[in-house]
Amino acid sequence: MLSQEILSRFQCSGCGECCRWTGSVLLTDADIPKMAAHMGLSEQEFIDRHTRLAPNRRQLALLDQPDGSCAFLAGNRCTIYAARPEQCRTFPFAWSVPAGCPELDKLLAGEKNIEREDDNP
Ligand code: SF4
Ligand code: SF4
Image 1: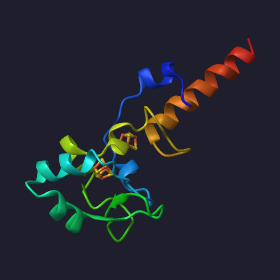
Image 2 (image 1 turned 180 degrees about the vertical axis):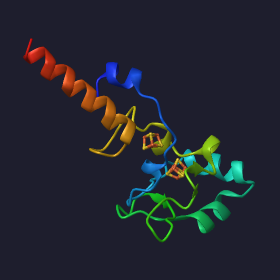
Image 3 (image 1 turned 30 degrees about the vertical axis):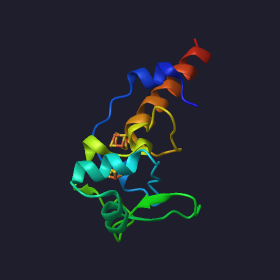
């Protein structure tokens, strides 16, 4: 778990890297009506057009592009940013993956350098 101190200094650069990982953008029950309404679709239309069954077989996930990036990514931008799923809204504050975000990596590398300086006064 990342420290609150690190997270308080985190600033997203909008590079879009976290939307390019291969893997599933899992949807909660609350995500679906919100995203459907944002797109002017019924929930069933949204599910049929934009989701697939996740590998855990308990949830739906957003469709991917051929390179594994999220289907809603265009350039570096999320085309449904205002209604993006909880999994996206809470990264990296509630969860993160190793080497998953360049800006987080910079903060963590800076933290390690400070620790090394403290070790060698
Ligand atoms: S990888 Fe990190 S810096 Fe890049 S868009 Fe995602 S959260 Fe922002
Ligand atoms: S929904 Fe938006 S923020 Fe979430 S992975 Fe897709 S493009 Fe990125």
